[in-house]
Image 1 (spheres, rainbow, N blue to C red):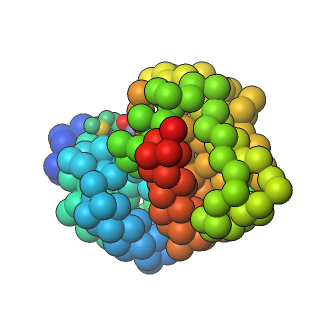
Image 2: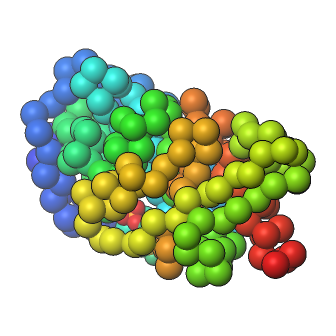
Length: 226
Ligand SMILES: CSCCC(=O)C(=O)COP(=O)(O)O
Ligand SMILES: [Zn+2]
């Protein structure tokens, strides 16, 4: 068994974690890891998580907040159930007995912030080209109306203008989280990060996937009809 401060066998990097979280089991973490790996392979197949891009998370504890998040820098088309890290509210690694402490996604801090602010139990971040192109065309938000697929993100298809917010990119997850907090609309489960990609969320990973797929379609539609 590996202790909470051993290095990542793939990257050789040390995961800096807090003390082990006794409330979490390795089984729970790896079950989440299996779901994250399956969705990651799906999104990689769509071309939205090419190479090492993108990251996914699932809430595995609320009090205190704990997320299972994809490990950093790995091929997102080839993740295994064990390619997962556990983080706390600030995105820092938390040790779990029986879980080798891989380096969490560089964007884990934003995942935790999204989960805390929205109440969502799953967060998806993909580098879909349509998200970056749409944010380029509409840096103050992507406006959508009168299209049936809006129902797929929980909005009305008609008589409702939906704005998908756009925030400026940053590598500082606290700064990015602050921008997210200011911009997000609780009615619209997605935010674009300019020159970067898309964040979407849902009550579980399947719902977050459906939102991601519908938002990506809506962005492609907006670009095609502009
Ligand atoms: C070529 S991906 C650059 C980093 C990034 O934006 C991303 O989504 C993947 O980062 P991670 O640390 O989760 O692998
Ligand atoms: Zn990214």
